[in-house]
Image 1: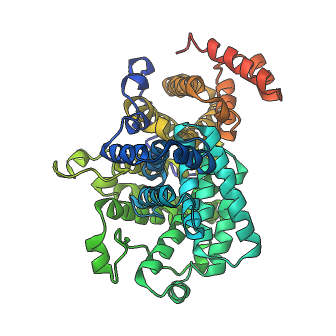
Image 2: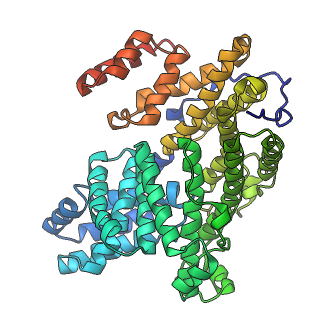
Length: 510
């Protein structure tokens, strides 16, 4: 198995300790989701519409279509989806789902029913609300029922109807819900279904896409959806350590440009003029993520070859990945000194801009951790420990100094698990470095302990949550007896009791 170059990190550089005790608590800062619930001018408009409808119609709509969620709550959950998911994978123009939901609600209040077209439009809105519920932890029961309704709707389409772009979009949204709800292999499965449909439609070929969609706007949306799928396919392969489906050898598709927020573009120039700053910013991020995903795919393929002559190729690809990080524009560079001054004071910061910076910053570390997990770690103990400790420090800054970690916890937990796995394996072979890594170990365990205290019970069955507890056990956060009984327990009430006891044991640590 090839070793990884060591010039990427300075292996002689001492580990920089962070003091978890000196960092502010997240509760002192406030989270994005809490700010989201404070209310805006749009919420005032929503309240006026909501109050103008008779209570019986409101109740019927809430119970039949939203499973108890109010109109205002649903709008907030759609906004959570926009800020956390749609900013990274822009399958809908910003504000599109909120506008559709408002119109559907308005029509329902007038007609007291929904047409078949409105039901179709409402389906995407329902799964967006379910995703927002999974992200925020608000009304998880309602979110789960909305997800189940959506699944029942698309299962028939998968088996009995011809493939179409809307079904691909639906599967990508299902994947987002499953991933953010920490449902393990289900997220991988739904993504691969979407990949098969995209290949069947020919979304990976420019000529086939142009024959499939005659107008510019539809072609560009199909192109955006395909590249969102491509990025997710590579990312899920890294998370799950399983093969990706979309092979670069078969792909002949142009990069996405941007899309028309007004729906009236006929050329690239007119689209760029009509597109909002949010859409242009997301388009730039997606293009950089496509380049990252291409390099990630080449690295994964080189690792799978397991041949001596692939060593130089891996070295070169890691170098290209580091260079990719340095080419990030200031708008996507979390370390850029002037990134807060990029937007004029009289302009609003693009939605999701801070999140996209942090995500882009962590992506190179994620693929490096995957490389170290896939090779013989004895050959590169130092760079593996440097990468994992650096990654933990970045996550610590993200958790304690910003509001981003808690806003999309499952996503960052995947990175934390990968860093802990590499660090633990490295220290297994080189325990003499444990003292140098102790600040990062303590920081990681403090993050885990706070996650365990604040997590909702519905998240405690997730695969990543269980892995976090496994590494807590390996690093000595709580007693092996309690953890073993926790892992073996099949009784929900017993598991809750054990979790409560374990959390109480963390009091001295935190």
